[in-house]
Length: 330
Image 1 (tube, helix red, strand yellow):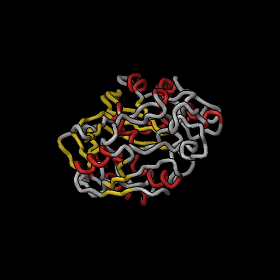
Image 2 (cartoon, rainbow, N blue to C red):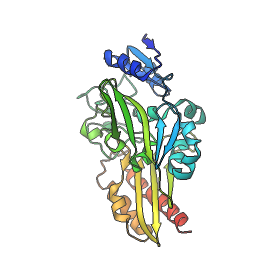
Image 3 (cartoon, rainbow, N blue to C red):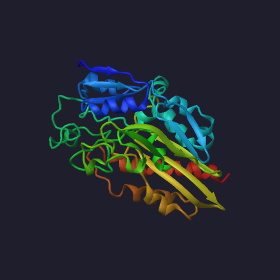
Image 4 (cartoon, rainbow, N blue to C red):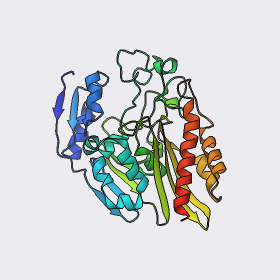
């Protein structure tokens, strides 16, 4: 690992100023991804500004909104009673996202900023990576790409967004509050990440020195049910091949409203608006669930290694919808 400078401020303004003043500086929180990238030589900041002493921890319900400090760990958020009662699919995604050890280190803000798991991105000996080096090519397109994305990608980059908890948060229209040198701003998560087919080297809309300070999560109203289904190669600690975050409200046997997002398939957590529109106002029907899933996956860009994800994503969504409809109509 290369030598680097290290700061540990206690105030948000100090941390923002330190990173803003140095183009080669970066924030460090739980470090569960960042330190791996530094050891691999993929990420080489000259200065790390450790933000773990900033007053950004805690969970507070405010009306129908849950305000989560960015340094709240995944484990702390999963343990909140209000999350189990009103945001069950968020809790399920948190628990499915990492081992207990990692959940006790990883912060909710850091999880939203985690880098892609693409093996070519994480191997500096591979020169063709448009995400690391613009216009250098994409090694994944011509090689193994089983764990890569099929939505929001093209021949320039098929990098996958690997966060689990981001998937239900996108379905909920959650947002983040960001603090920078020019003050604060709120950013909806649906507009936070940049799709790979819109610019492989740009991952999100944060400017240099901007820090996520809070995640704002709308609570599901009463009578909604939700669930998160993650399909993976092994039950313990593995990234998703496909996943589905679904919340529904039934009205007299009809789907009154629903929120759906898919994981494991997109360069960003994928809001499935086509499926939502098809399902609202209809009676539960597995054939309709299947059609809703195929509508979402209609624009998939597949490679020989990723073609299976289209059918798997449709079946994942169909299964989760079937389970939830059974629960909602009991």
